[in-house]
Image (cartoon, rainbow, N blue to C red; front, side):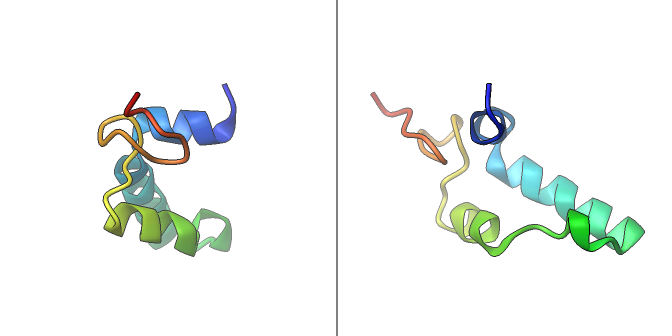
Length: 59
């Protein structure tokens, strides 16, 4: 399983929340969520739970 499939499995909203918490706690730029992840969550692309994320699961 690659990194994008894993993000879809966990949920992009969950991953975003984890990254935001880590970034706030440690102030490390490596934990800052990338803008694409934020845009996808706002658009409702949450991974498997919504049917689309980095991959399409609506089949």
